[in-house]
Length: 77
Image (spheres, rainbow, N blue to C red):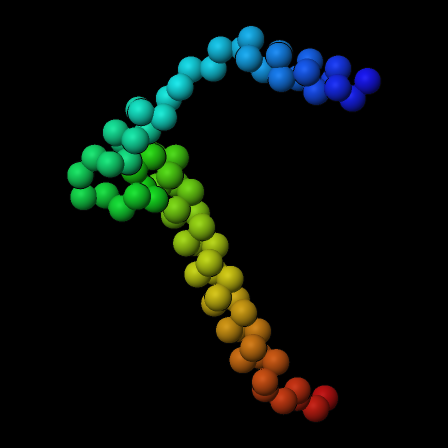
């Protein structure tokens, strides 16, 4: 039974023709246009990069703020 299942998944995978887009991506990423590799994907990559950097900066500032707040003694009421 296991042999039939494994043969079936292998044979169905070969029937589907998937377009090989590797050469297109190689040209895109090897092109010398002055952009760093993590931004060569276009607008989506730039947006993802900026979002990640914004969240990192916000998180760092938030952590430092609460570190400073928690290091101060509480006021006696």
